[in-house]
Image 1: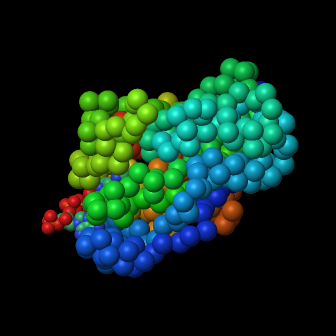
Image 2: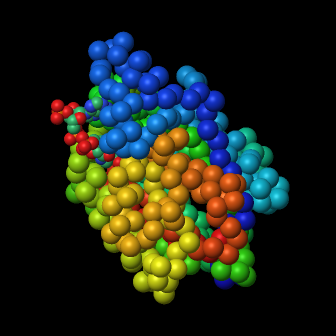
Length: 324
Ligand SMILES: CC(C)(COP(=O)(O)OP(=O)(O)OC[C@H]1O[C@@H](n2cnc3c(N)ncnc32)[C@H](O)[C@@H]1OP(=O)(O)O)[C@@H](O)C(=O)NCCC(=O)NCCS
């Protein structure tokens, strides 16, 4: 068994759809001005899904994980490792992965979270791939789950219109057939202040600033460059030409970033899976949500070459090249 291969995917979106018009009306009651026209033109986002108070990243992750297990046709007991990528964990500890493990009944499976903001799913996939290829795990649940609506400052229109909630999951299993072909991860911690949420718990209180803050234009420039360089690097390592890629499943932050990216790489825009119009930016959940959507609607087929990419706070970036 020399490869780790995706054998199932699943996702979960909260029931509440918030359109740009809904959000604009809600923000107007706080004296914050925005519009569907501005949001669509600058980002491509038309709506997002949001959790009701009390629904957590664990709740969404467990539903997405169950759907992925069902799609894979394996029982929870067959899972020997659970990795959850999240920046909006339910608790400081135990990890979201441990809470999901208990819900699913995968007793004994190792479980931990990774935190690499919107690159979290790429980091989690890279970690899972290493475990499988080293022979230390056979079936891994890799989940991205977020409730970013809990860390948005509704008085800051530059950020609060961009994000949504959701979860996506894959089952990554040991296989003789090619699956993960290449992985490329990177970070630049000196860019911490372009995208961050600096709150923490100390002495029984939340201290610092618990809201997401962002320098949008700096993030935009860094994102395009990081994603383009990372795509080229992962293809070089795997000995694959960019033209051979069937589908790009990039982090869903802004359609203008994705247009720049596909132009820079010379990849046809029709090959880029876009879900941000419906989901907005769901951080670590965005890539597995988009992957599951494109598999279930029949676009991504077995045997195709798929490039998944993340980019975000840290600053972090990463690519995972997969034969489906
Ligand atoms: C956030 C982003 C959409 C802003 O677009 P932009 O073209 O850079 O816009 P600016 O921030 O320069 O703002 C332009 C104007 O629009 C206004 N504006 C900002 N948000 C607005 C909103 N939601 N509604 C209406 N107007 C808004 C600003 O106040 C500014 O007005 P001013 O010139 O009178 O001050 C864009 O920078 C972006 O997408 N960056 C990447 C962000 C990202 O992807 N983050 C997640 C990465 S994981």
